[in-house]
Length: 382
Image 1 (cartoon, one colour):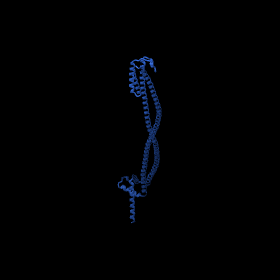
Image 2 (cartoon, one colour; image 1 turned 120 degrees about the horizontal axis):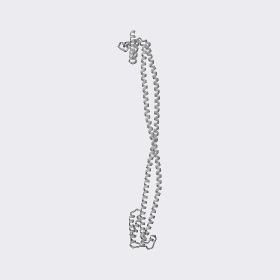
Image 3 (cartoon, one colour; image 1 turned 180 degrees about the horizontal axis):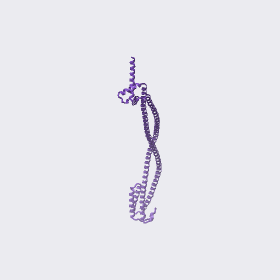
Image 4 (cartoon, one colour; image 1 turned 30 degrees about the vertical axis):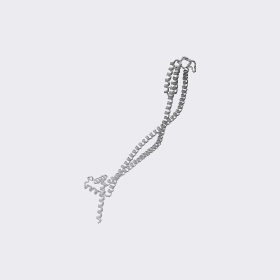
């Protein structure tokens, strides 16, 4: 019974070792090592040399891993420094964007306020300009009216002067020209007819004028007196006509003097008022010019700040991409390092397991190799 138990244990142990050998052979390195060991055993290679080869291989894996660990640590340290620097640059750019936005938030309301003030000043200027235009138009109308009045008065004065000249040039007694003369004179009927015709024409024209209609009526009356003087040969009436001409000339001059004084007064009042309006307009133009200069300055600052913000945004995007690319590079390097480490750990474990089997299961290993050769595995034969 004891013998049977021993045989079972031996069979179980062999089956366990056989499974372990098959597991080793599933890896490329394990199969290669088993093939190498099989050849060395078949060629009579000393067992110590086989062990030494495996020990050297195990040590090489350990050395390679140490070097890889050191290189990865150094590389990841550089990565950490690079990423920290890039993150700090991004933080600085974000702080700069905050500062630029704060500056925009400060400038924009001031700009809008100045624009509103300019709009108000322009509206005020338009109203003032309307007052100036209306006042100037009124002054021009007054001046035009005065000049028309001057022309009308000049016309009446020339009519009266011409009527007196007709008497003066044609009466036979020169002394009659003097005001207040009483000596007898001789006349001709043609003179009275000529004076009457002249005065009637002038009276009709004056009656259509604005400022001398009253004088037109007086001229009309003189024309009628000239006709009567002709009809009745009345020397006294002729003198009255001439005296009336002189009186009308005096009245005409007085009326024109009054009109001139009125015009001068209106002109002076206009000039004084216009000076005040001009002063106010100059103040408004100066205020508008100052506002426009301030608005332009603020607009330039806003444009420069927007440009700086756009540039800052572009730099932030570029720096973010640079950081992400660097992070991906570092992560890829870490992944590749982990893959190498896992592969190396697996190979080193394979070597370690094989050393263990050589130390404890040499007999089973030889039987396994023999079984593989017998099964036709050419890799395990010479």
